[in-house]
Image (tube, rainbow, N blue to C red; front, side, top):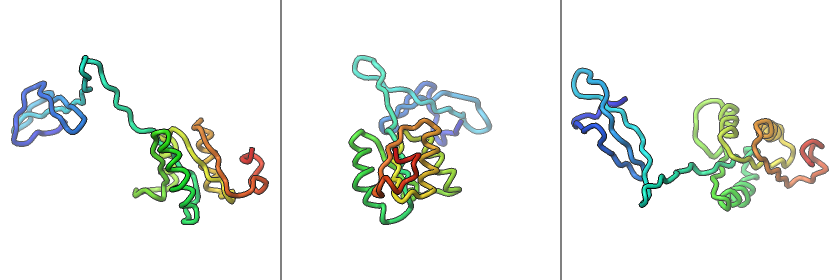
Length: 156
C-alpha cells in the first residue's frame, strides 16, 4: 500500500505506465489523505482478448571469469541466445552485491537453459554445470579443449 501524495484518485481509476496498466483501489484512510493499492491490470486487445506479456527467456553462461573467454561469450553464446529470442547473462558482466556463489545459483535457477564452456575443465564451471543438471535445466556443453582432456563424465 502506498500513499498517493497531493492527489485524490477515484476508486477504479486506471493509471498507465508505459505498456503497463494499473488500477487504483481505495484502501484505508490513515491520518492525512487516503491510502491506495496499485493493482496491475492486463491490457486487452481490439476484440477484448487478453494479451500475454512474457518475460524474455534467460540463458545462463557458465564459464571462467577470464578475458580470454570473452570471444566465446560475445561471439558465440550471446548470438546463439538472441537467435532464439533469449537474453544471455554472465555473472561477471553484472553488477550486484553479496555472495557470488549465491548469485550464480540464483541465476541458474532463474534461467531457462545453460551454456557451459568446459574448456580446461575449470572446477567452478563444472560445479555450475552440475548444479544446472541437478535442477533439470537444459545444458549445452561447449569446449575449446580436446574432449580427451575433459573428465569422462562431462565429455560424453
